[in-house]
Length: 78
Image (cartoon, rainbow, N blue to C red; front, side, top):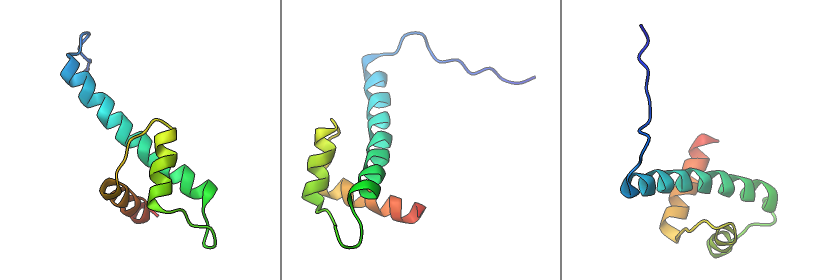
C-alpha cells in the first residue's frame, strides 16, 4: 500500500516563513538564470552589482556572497 503524505492544514508562521524563504531561494536561481541568458553574452557582461539590482527590481533580495554561490550552482548545472 502506498503511503499518503498530507500537508498540515495550518502552518505556523515560522514554518510558513521557512517555506517562503526556500521558495524565494529557488525563484532567485530561476530569475538569475533567466537574466544571464537574456541580458548577457561574452561581449556584454553584467556586474554582480547590476545583477543584485535587477533581482531587487524583481522583488528578490541577494548579496554578493550568495550571488557568487548561485552562479557557481548554475555553472555546475551547465
